[in-house]
Length: 173
Image (cartoon, rainbow, N blue to C red):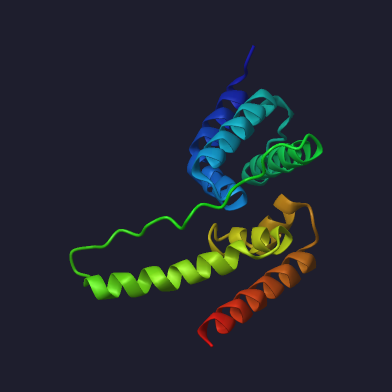
């Protein structure tokens, strides 16, 4: 029988779905695969919610489940010769009434270059950068979710930014 605490955890897990999907999208780089991954991680988290320790970081626990699910699926696909995630073209950016077409084209070109440079980053650098820059998590939260020391997170984010800058500078020459 489920306790009231289990129901609260389940509700919080459901509330985190948009962030969970965005993190899955950053890992898979594919909307459909990200949706499947987020659903699988949610199902696993809901099934294991009794093992969650109240007072700890639920978001870190949930993101760890998603990340481990992703890594396990990739490992299994590699072992069995299955498909690996495909990187689709960048999502289109909507134009508001107040922007000119020229401005929209420039913004898309710049964002596309950044997105493509980000996609070329090794996963060990891309994930901490995504969590810190897009999800706006502290270095301590990122370290907790990835299971690495804070210093490692800081150095990986620094290196990721340096790699992005170098890649973008190389495209402009």
